[in-house]
Length: 195
Image 1 (cartoon, rainbow, N blue to C red):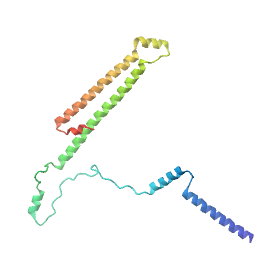
Image 2 (cartoon, rainbow, N blue to C red):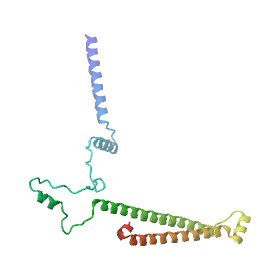
Image 3 (cartoon, helix red, strand yellow):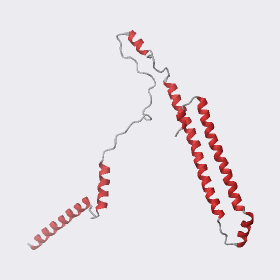
Image 4 (tube, rainbow, N blue to C red):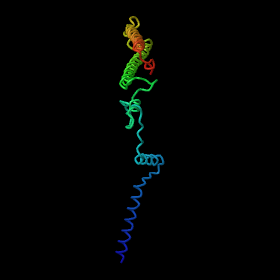
């Protein structure tokens, strides 16, 4: 009888240990509220529904042709509905597409020119800081210090690089101005030149 009760007690104890282990695995409470909150947020993110797709003008292509009239009873109304309405634009969808492509091309050209100017200005800033550093440079080698004191080779090289970079920036800015003039002559919208 003792063997049966011992066996029954050990089965109950074993099953209760399994139940407790499963409960701990499911909850995985660490006692750290930050870790528990992060775990709950991760689980909520996995079970959350996917956000709906938001369509923009870029996603939706423009229609190629105007919708045809659906009336089949009156041919004269069909002919009249296919005529352009007075006061509306006579541009075809292809010219609108060409305008959009032209705008994208001009905007791309202006963006590239501005990026080139910004890159050159950053390089100029670096060169100027290096030039200022060379002005107060200390050489531990007395021979090098004496040579630099009289020849100023490092400083003169930096000054030449700074002057060349300033000239490059002026040319890039002139190129931007020329690009604006070309846009104006091509009949494009002046807003295309803006960022």
